[in-house]
Length: 136
Image (cartoon, rainbow, N blue to C red):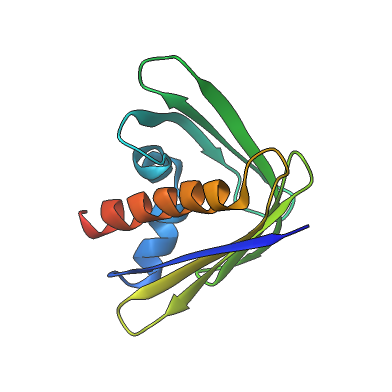
């Protein structure tokens, strides 16, 4: 299975980045790839064996889906690894760059969509996260 990597450097300390990445009240504000989408619901049981769930949908109601995963590894302010419902794994690391935080996610590609499309979609969500954190 192919691995895809995305990354962004967020101009904020790791503690803030971690909080905004993991708290449902923040996740709802950034967890979508474009302005015509939204994340009206997010739940996060941040522990090994805990469940992550987020509703992602078009604002016009034309399409939506629930993204769910189970956590495999949690290292506070450093790393999160989870397994998605279809068995694919994603791992995100948070690297302290002295006031900034490099966020890197490596995930297993799925077979339904081209890898470039998957990379662009996940990168767009990460870019939205960066914008949200830096604007708050």
